[in-house]
Length: 386
Image (cartoon, rainbow, N blue to C red; front, side, top):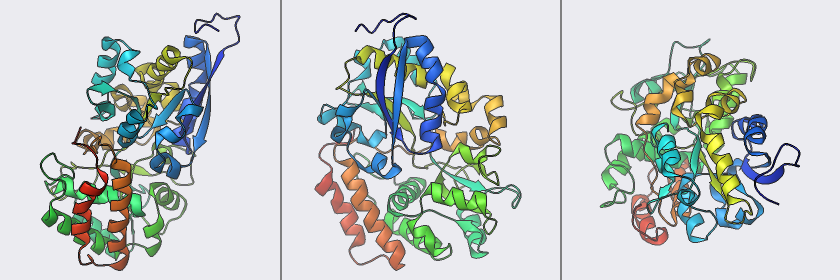
């Protein structure tokens, strides 16, 4: 069947993969009508768990899909396993330049690897802060504010292993010693300061936070009234929307040492085209539609997605819909730290996560812990920074 179908032809069905949360699924499905109208195609989206989304290598499942929503640190492994197609082979330079220009912060560029574009930013996020506007006047601006609120028993912080890693990386960047710089993988002195900060914070938030992710914390904060604030969690606009949960959350910039809200670890997601697809040009066109301003300002975000396009983040209507989520956190996104694209990064991140988490649970920096963190560069990373 040709990729060019008319209105009388049964639409081509593409298989899509995303992650299992309203933010990951609803916006994509809400854009089905637009995708079919523009391309004569229907995408059947399968949602995988957040854990699988973050941990499983793309090459292990890419053969089952045409389009995939992926996390940028997985790009090198996907490229080396021939799991995805470079989009600069399928899209013209002007289209890519437009999407790069309209990207929120470094979201678009986070899918660059070896000079090629491997996905389009459809979702943007970073570690930020949250609070209950019915219980508090605003978010914590400085880390000193975080500790003051935490000592009153009102602060939450998700620090299960993967989120502990994100906070560790955020603090390193805020201390002026970002992780995995070309000339230095880890600054031991900055690592000690970051770990001490996190250990102190772990001691004054609820013990269940050690097993919590940002969704778990947002659920508690939006359904119960024992807590008023949360810090260093990835933002989810869903919790700022009327009716999503009993209480709306307001999101704001990440807390920082200097009040400038820089260094937050960048998250988000991008749409890639599987090398297994029989319709690569069509799959790429669908990716452009989902990442482009039309869907992002319209069906994608209104339907529950979290956009990666700056036009959506600047939209007054979308900010009205989400308690000014986008306006409140854009500074953080624009100053975020981007994890490098390096072969072996997912394994390194997982190993580092557990070392950091063990320090938090044990409430001490175990002897040799920082040396083990430094050694991970040699054990897991298999190429220079890209």
